[in-house]
Image (tube, rainbow, N blue to C red; front, side, top):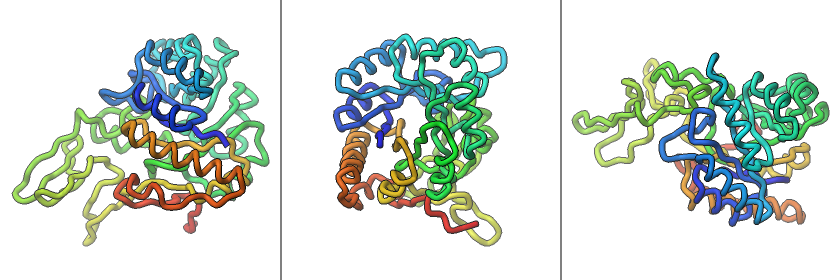
Amino acid sequence: MELVCPAGTPAALRAAVEAGAHAVYCGFNDETNARNFPGLNFNRQEVAEGIAFAHRHGTKVLVAINTFPRAGQQDIWHRAVADAETAGADAVILADLGLVAHAAERHPGLRRHLSVQAAAANPDAINFYAETFGVKRVVLPRVLTVAEITAINREIDAETEVFVFGGLCVMAEGRCSLSSYATGLSPNMNGVCSPPSHVVYAEEGETLAARLGGFTIQKAARGAPAPYPTLCKGCFTSGDTTGHVFEDPSSLDASELIPALAKAGVTALKIEGRQRSRAYVKEVVRSFRAAVEAVDAGRPVPAGQLARLTEGQAATTGAYAKTWR
């Protein structure tokens, strides 16, 4: 299976390539990219140079243009698709239906992947994109079990890519409204969840409050680590209980499920983490490359190597092995 790895900076791209990524995904430093944070991402020259470097090492580069264009300003997104093709991208990762149609019509030679932000989670939706717009691969939402992925792969004419490590969001992909409610900036349109410009840390007696858009998301004792205020992972009081109402701060780690995902017909394994350091990227990519090679050779997947890199030092297999219904 292809190992698709994150790169939020040119340095992270080089680290991912040198650590053994089969493919790297990155984005332009503007709102066409769903990780539109200050200090991250690539200008046009950096994308072209990164692609050239990756290709010299036999690695593909996928450019994520995975936010939803605003009415009347779609030219920004159209230019991004054209610039990705000019730079030599191996594929673009798109979410918006109109942008997928535009790419198919104006850039037919550019391979098209469907972003997880499009939330295509059943054979009818996936086959529609494949048959109508020539989409070759779909990144599946993180709400499916391995059995459900197996059933989908039996009925579609497209490759599937699934997340195996990194941040885990409780929202239906592409449908999050919490951050936009608190800040006025939408993750799916402006490309930023819990934007740093709206984050405030304030001392309140013996505690440090982490706030987003004026809302207190979590409090920590003086001197204790203060979490980044992400709404869905905040600590709230509901009734008589105080805790993580939406989601515990934990990371996805599906490394032990790689053999099952291979059997399910998955084409590519995706690592989340374009906001992470190059050291993080290097270690995670190296570990998963070893896991993929172990599966190919019929050996057990090495376990427990990445525990200290998970969010809150806690990991979950998420919906892949969910027991609720």
